[in-house]
Image 1 (spheres, rainbow, N blue to C red):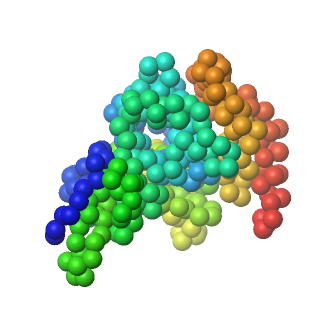
Image 2: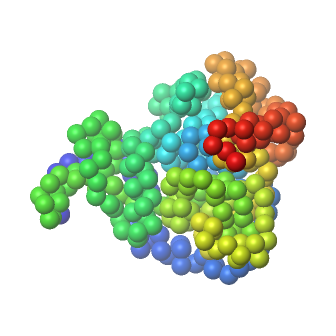
Length: 334
């Protein structure tokens, strides 16, 4: 297959499906109880130098608790897939203050911005510092890379990014289609070392249910070498078996199950609770001043033992109930 051009961006992960299979082959398919605390899950399954995938979309259904714990445990030199990442990327970028280097490599599609809320001043500083290696993609391109990994092929062809500066800064390759002679972009498979996905329900083995749109999370779950699930609630395996068609992530993909009610806060959890727009604005405001932001992080993340304590600082169950009422009263909600 003829290669016409190659982007100048670095390729951070090995797209070879056979190399990935050597890891997947060792994963147990047994129904073992995988319930543990978020602290234990991050300690056991997130290692310095790992490439991390984050589930959800924007500030919707993100796994906030393990992201906080990654900061708390001071993980270093991580790679990150920025597939429509907003508050989750904002959290990760907070680990690069004071010369620290939590983030080292980023496959960037949508980062820094929190959509209509504005840009994260700290994430912008981090990305403009020159301290992080960056490869640029579109949201679709990153989703296609995950799909290639799930398919067990080293790349998938697409027309996405042709003729753009994004292609020039990516690690994609322009090729000629052997059937039509037309130009295509080869998008390399992406196998994260570890991914974090928040779901509505899971049993103790990791059979998961997600209500609403799943974005690219079903592919992310299947191509990640290790997977940490946080869930609003743990339900019985009998309940899972009573409606197997509702299981979208099977247990054999999962390494850890952590029960974290309100675990997407301050993001939105469809059908559960609305995003805390006041708290997200607070993040964006305090980030303008680095010293103020450091004090904010110390109070809300580093000086608290767990995510539940963070929720207490942010208004506790009274605030969570208000957000739940907002979500349930939205038009179209039952």
